Image 1 (cartoon, one colour):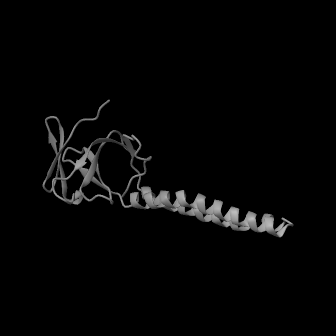
Image 2 (image 1 turned 135 degrees about the vertical axis):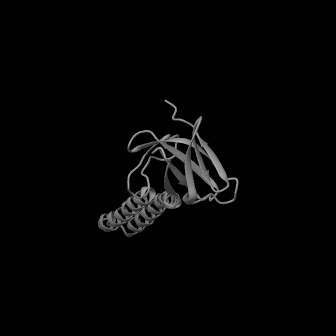
Image 3 (image 1 turned 180 degrees about the vertical axis):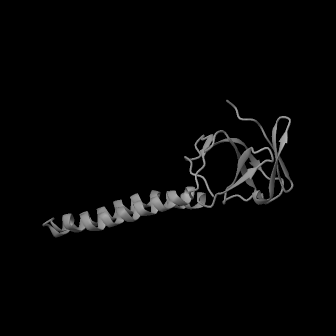
Length: 167
């Protein structure tokens, strides 16, 4: 299971679906790129062929090719970034009292983590994040227990206090 959420630009809430989050965005971005390339290949050449002067036709074709290449470079950089974010993994951990947290482990840094506490049935709010004391954070072996100031998440050598949600 995975989560779909907005870009990490100050987002503190997470809506949990059974969808591959960044994988879904990656495929949508890939389809948009393929659609753009197809549209360019079908629409631009007939317009360029209508130019009567050969030197102007060649110049226009070269300039359109350069403009398309310049437009494709930011798309490729963004595509690679989405691909890296698509490697993010989410693990749902449930305490004995029924409280749940989502543990996020990004694919690009094996020691980082983020913990989202359940706010409502589908909405999770970021509660804490950090770096593992070991080199690799393993969310698969996590246990969640009640604690006086919230919840206590234990993942291998890491003991992470999960504070209550801020209103």
